[in-house]
Image 1: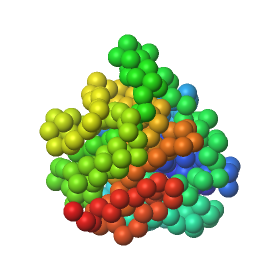
Image 2 (image 1 turned 135 degrees about the vertical axis):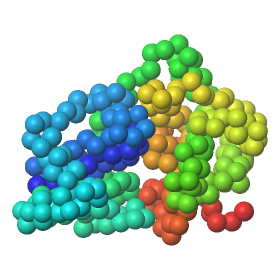
Image 3 (image 1 turned 180 degrees about the vertical axis):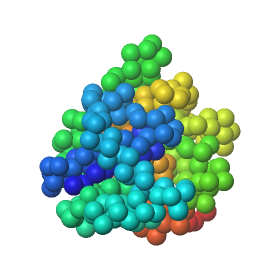
Image 4 (image 1 turned 30 degrees about the vertical axis):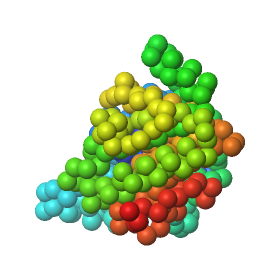
Length: 294
């Protein structure tokens, strides 16, 4: 039996759900386990027309997963872990740099807990149409977002996601910080303004003050109303823009991926992690900016 663990924020949950759907094509017994206690919790049902719930069996399997993954009270849980291991229960972790590994899609014996991000498009490239059906947003109905929707549709709209905040704290800065710098964003903005004379940027950021003070736009709308449990609405707005500039973030990755404009231009960094040496996370058609040069 294969079990895919849902963790972290909305973008991660979407990648994991996509990986789950692909795994289910191979093994119909594949199940989802919800382990979302960060950011805004479990968000898939709220953002999309999905109805994902945990059965009693899945809750029991979740308890086993917690026993396998815990590092606390080693002397107490060690015997239980040994028994679970003998029964074929194991955690399969994604490689550190998120590069695509075909073997993760193959069926393996035992009870396998797939614990990772699974962000590469290659993990779910065979179920694209199914994902577009699954990830249909519940369109925001509040007046301010309705105005943004109208403006996005009326203009040559370019979504730009500037993620700072949590990426700059001590736990994340050595992983995610330093990839999408001021130079990266400004180069991407300049490229879009050169390509599209009527470019209108819609700026999404957890640090709008920095964005206004440090980046040059000819024409921009700054969106800061969708916060906390409503942040998924920003991804929806990103997805209906005509073009996208993304951060090294699964949130704007999915915003760009779900953009149905056949002639869209998507600009992304050439790596996802500060220590990354590959870029298999990003689709080949996206324009990659070298982030190792100033």
